[in-house]
Length: 239
Image (cartoon, rainbow, N blue to C red; front, top):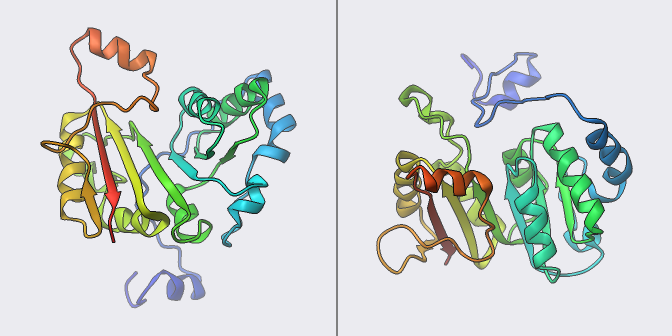
């Protein structure tokens, strides 16, 4: 940024500041079904990014615990969780438009009313649209591991991010991560164990067994047959 103290000053001066992203924007090609689902269901299930705080009770038409998932892929697990827990409200954030369309298609087929989706940078949504203390659980399943050492700075689990997550969780709310990269699991544990305001829910060590509410995917089953591991970490907000 040179002579500018922050991004706001640079922007005011008309200078573009490159941001380190934890994801790669992938438009992809929509199938007819995905395009139709976006057209049919986005008006009722989609949340547009506005940069302004939203009233989640108004968004869902009821007051219920809210679970947020970042990076839901094609949405199968997210839709299944929402279907299995009708007493909870679910929000999914995904930057891959075909995934958003696929999730809306399946949610529409199941007639779900407790699921909303967004297509935007999750960090910006957390910071600007979700009120403090509004989430009962935040789910981050199989995020991009950025396995090359020079790319580790792009990993979404970093001190600033986990502090933002903490402020958005209710007291006693959970931050649940899962990864199939042991190195990333170790990184997650290292960052979280140093973060203030969290307690690791593991009975021993850093990792917990996969909770029943997280569906096991075909990808996981295939990986397990090949001897690959999956690590779940659940931390509870305590301050």
